[in-house]
View 1: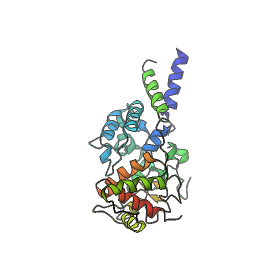
View 2: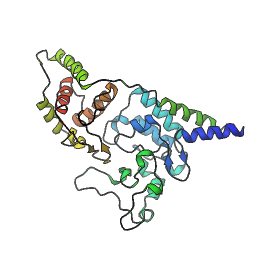
View 3: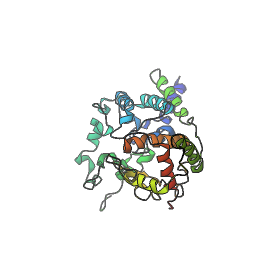
View 4: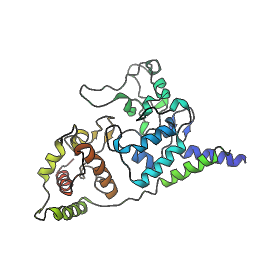
Length: 159
Length: 140
């Protein structure tokens, strides 16, 4: 029993779970390719299943862009997101177009006092860019699912 | 353990399934030939695609906010950045990036998405052919 239990837990972790506490997430190749072309492939474990479900239902109008998927990819990613979604209320995706960046957890982690002087990415006037969508600007290994503090970009003049 | 097992199996299946999406290899020349045949069904007089029309198609907005160049930049021989997320986008010209226009499914997927974003409709075979004719003239 014990072996089986560790085995299932190991599978869960390998299949896309987090290494608890260090903010590193394994991303499946399909997910990384299909959901990581226009933005960093956001870790599935950082939003709840309901939030992901709503997101997948409206991929044709995905925050101003058509992000529709082929039926097979859509099915794979839907089941992957349901399997890996968070069950914590702090990760609840809110509203008609849930955003990972508006969950209670994300907002708490990116409060000014949590950033310790980290500047948010600069957005030139007239640009459509949004600072919080640019994970890679500070989390240098975000594309590999690594959001650990060790991979944060150093702030000039401090470590 | 019963709490974990269904989740673990589901996740493992989803993970394994990740490698099953088939590639559908092609080349710019093959795509051009297919689009030319398709375009001639509605315009039998069409002889060849035009790189000049493609260049203009690429760099102008089509009634909306965005053009192809908004993300792919005015020089598709170099990389660009997504207009909202600033994520790096690899060069679009096949000479600069041989993986471009090498997979039918990807080509169809991205024309499908981006034409709707930029034009509010699907691109015609002639527009796709002109665009690729232009991109083939762009060297890194």
